Length: 169
Image (tube, rainbow, N blue to C red; front, side, top):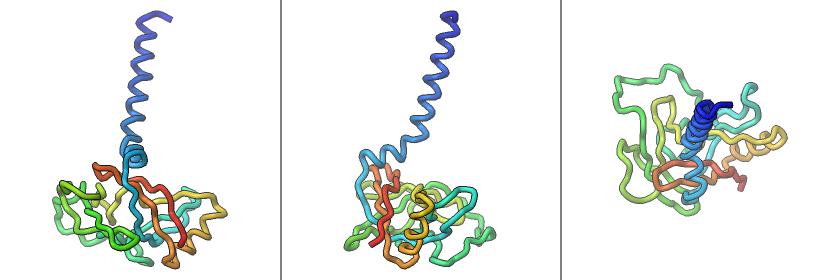
């Protein structure tokens, strides 16, 4: 292999590694440097034959989340709303759990907050799906449906969140 070709292959490999780093930076940063918060959860859609066993979670204490049993509509009322996209939700602790405040378009200067996207039918913060083995999915779904489960989430200083665990209480 010629030196020029080796350099090109090396550059391509480094570029791919950099892209992988960029892709996983937000959840990795949250897992490593984030503060742990506990949020109440409720199920949205417990099973998808194409994605396997998982619990699609809703967060009743965050704004813009569907209520339990609510079926998302494709034709949600969306007046011309130029303010859709990146959204920030400040979090405050209330007892054992954290509760979201009003959605903002600018990041709060202090405190814990989630960086989300509200372009879709619901507020998406990257903590909506919890994958688990098939045999555990039904039991966790029952616990979440019964209102006795919480999500353990790590949130970094930039608002990036990573779902660490879903715990039945």
